Length: 269
Image (spheres, rainbow, N blue to C red):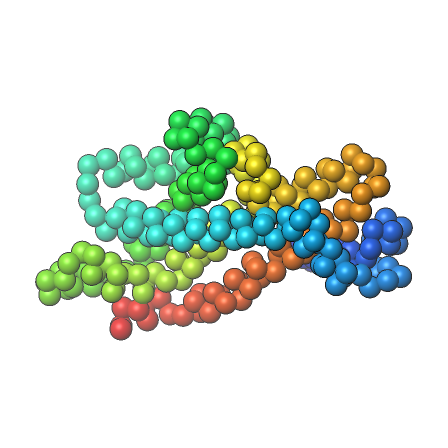
């Protein structure tokens, strides 16, 4: 366990320390210790000025892609998972088996066929090229399906139907409040996955103004390497990486309270 904590904590500590250094200190001082000058705020100022404010555009793009994808993926997973858990229809078993199979397929293996489909739809090099594939979450759908099967009693739904409640009303007023912890989990998984997505945006986007943070910071890093450090970018890449973590931490802190809420709270309302 201690080794696992070190595995995750040391890189984070390095980013925190390195973001306070200028490029000279970054390349010359000890990795896990501060440099001669505290340059964090200078780095942040330069970060948002570099390339005519490219970092600001990249973080806005990332927020758009991640937020839209997370909301859409959560909504679709909730509807599909609830349908699989509480409705019977021909081919249900086959669909559940296919869903499990899709979870096993690495996302990188689907990038080329995804690109071909997006090219047919003529949305390559647009925001939709990143958002549309991220709306589908086999893992989220399966998680919701399992959660509903365990946490939403069939008797509760049947009682609502006896009271002549429509299916949409049952879903919205009874099922959604009960499965709120699962919805938050799917939302956070989708948010983090899209926020950290690198390969798909790299393939489907060529306009630098549409880059997310992952691709944008990588281009800066590659430029700094190619120019042998003559262009001061390494410190900006590290500072940009640190700031990129902050929104995810905030999202986790704000939403974690839903995990502590009781699974049956919504049903009682």
